[in-house]
Image 1 (cartoon, rainbow, N blue to C red):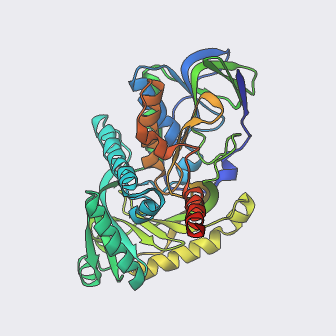
Image 2: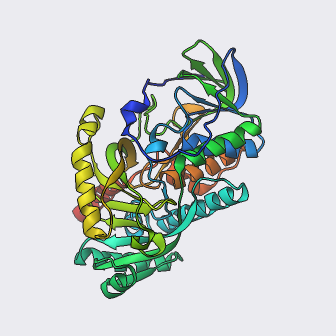
Image 3: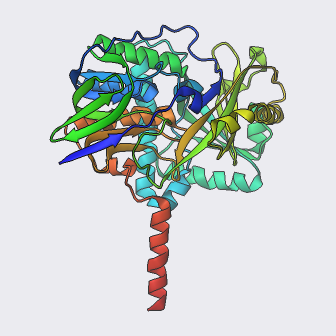
Length: 430
């Protein structure tokens, strides 16, 4: 039985615009020319942070791999990331409990925390120079009602064995000079330069024999126990497996109903006086919609972003950049009045997210031997590391029941709630 998949054309300009501050001191990976067709164990389609993590992990497991991208590695959505490596998920533990029950939700949160820890160990063990810094996080309440919600969230996290403390307004203001009604203060997250990290991971994979191929994969054909990747230049790559790591450049598959597309805006300030930055340089994010998130950089800039909305059209998204930048600056100034609000970089991008805030990882329905690695949402890089670990295990023939928590065809919260409502109505009629 054969299966076919056409991959749509896209370019980085459709996904992002503006100019972020990442990758200035790094060495870009060198392409290998594609002069003839070839075979490999795994073809990884996409050279951003997800493809880099997948290729590094697969080659560490002893598989041969080829990373194929039509554009410069990392200059799609990776370059637009703010690279806040958090284990806290866009959906709170309380929300995930409502969707999937406590045990499943707690397991998801623990695996997210383990992913940040695993990525941290990978970076340290290999001496990867990518501006990596361990960071605590401050999850801020937007108002008094939000503060009560965060208190309940912290209690639920304690039950799940997750670290952190709740700070009421007096403690938050005294310790951090942040005038909010409350916050959860948690250890175990980090920050990095996403481009530098991507390039070093690709270089590690290449040293183990991986190929970095500049080409456009236009179609995948699955027949028997192998996958053929057809390229625009007429060459073909034969592989045992293909991994779709195309990020927010949507592939030709029918995306699950859980998935939706959104846009986000971000900026980096001029270099700040280090004495004027907040305590611990914690990663700051806000329990609001649209939410605000902030971090610092090794050279003392503030990176701040948010103002997400459902804009999909690239031109419309780009036209909003000046106004969105002004709004983000105003919110930053209210939150941290000591900030120098002069802007050095401003950028925006179109992103993917899911209804439940979780990634899409695993087999592509109807496409044997084709796996997806989509770390959608605010935990993109954390989920990309998780995807690399899961896909490495799957290709090695290892399966765990919890893999289904991230499956492309999982039953999402909307479907679950609808079915429960129907069943409840049926009980009432009886």
